[in-house]
Length: 313
Image (tube, rainbow, N blue to C red):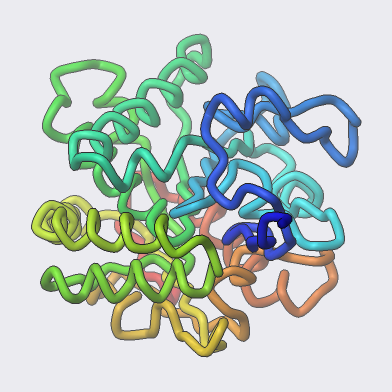
């Protein structure tokens, strides 16, 4: 009997393995639709760069069951971070961070810190020969937002390290796409996990295990969100939240997506938890709903890097 087909959360297409391991990804790396060259899925990967002329770093971080490319890639093959955003931000170095999210959000809470530290170190390595520091803007989907928050908390705690201090002081803005900020108790985080994985239509055993892990580690996840609030007051924050259900579930609603800071701009998107981070074309309504605002966010971050910007400016 053949194996039942499963739907990967980030892509929405049928695949034999819904949760690829790092080794499996490396062994069968998909070819890039533009270059035809096998692409890496783990690490910090440049999608677009003007070289020495870059004035800002834009870093995209995927979430649970995500992928450095496919989280942001539309079913038509368009990767908006590479194909559309550089048209409006020609001086931005745009990068995507890939990591094994199954490991990061399961096994033990120490894994979250490991991946967050990995993100900091990868960014630092890209900036070693840059000369003067450039502003950093993060774009996060789903639990990728938790990883970025933890990374900035670590950068603050370890600011005696010059590289970490650079990232802390250079981070000026964050776009959260379908990121759950409100998981006040174990039931809240478990509900998010159950809804997200139900929407992903992945295997029952994986679903059960990840829900249990997130429920067990709920205190740590809640503390990350609480600690981040104090670090976020000087940032420009755009919060995008989905208004469509997927598999009958609204994974992250407005209440869960809201941080509640005065420097946060709320942006509803006519999409579900999977499609909120995918854009079909540069002239699409999807780009108007998300891409145009990302462009504005980056411009705000580079315009007045030392001034707190209200999101409605």
